[in-house]
Image 1 (spheres, rainbow, N blue to C red):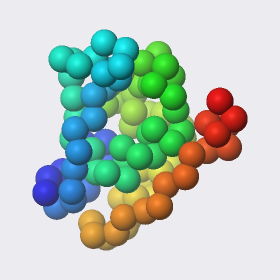
Image 2 (cartoon, rainbow, N blue to C red; image 1 turned 180 degrees about the horizontal axis):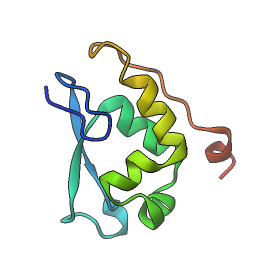
Image 3 (cartoon, helix red, strand yellow; image 1 turned 90 degrees about the vertical axis):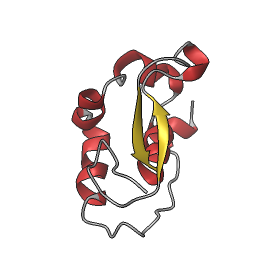
Amino acid sequence: MGTCEPCGRQQVETTVHHLFPKEMGGTFGATANLFISCQKQIHALYTNEEIAAWLTTLPELRADEKLASFIKWIRKQPPTKFMKIKKSRERRQK
């Protein structure tokens, strides 16, 4: 149990997110602790190529328009609630 760095929720189950995708050379780079649903939401919205291009820091993740609306919503949810995350329509077409 820990704190999700992008959304700030506490006492949630977190996972390690590589800010620069491992498959693109970020294995030993910076990481952040993310609530599992936040991690899934990032990967549901963006490909690893897109993440590597413009979402490689916590401020960039928080400022992203699509993620900001999700973060605003998820902050209001109880820490025990896990969301079912689906890929965006745009992402499914890629």
